[in-house]
Image (cartoon, rainbow, N blue to C red; front, side):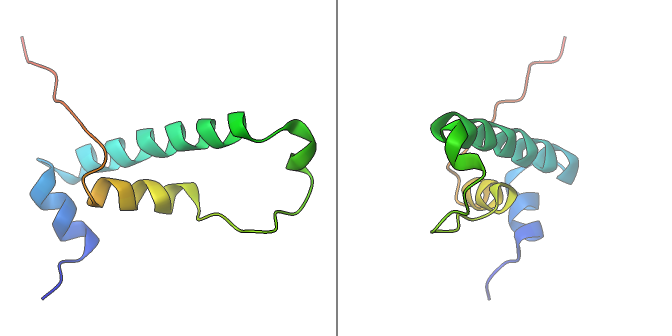
Amino acid sequence: MELDAGEKLDKRYSNRFEAVLVVAKHARRLNLERLREKPEEEETVEPEEKQPKVIAEAMNNVLKGKVGFERPERT
């Protein structure tokens, strides 16, 4: 039986809030990379090939384990 995204995140992270933060930070990073790659002139032109939404790509990367995360030490 295939686990859904929530169950996979629960296994990988201590709580869902932490998982949401990791996905959101990764999505912001991906969005910045896309904006840097795209020249200003192309922003108004309709893209020929649609890219997946940034949040969906970030979630997939996190679920596949492509995104690292370290918890800071408590003092």
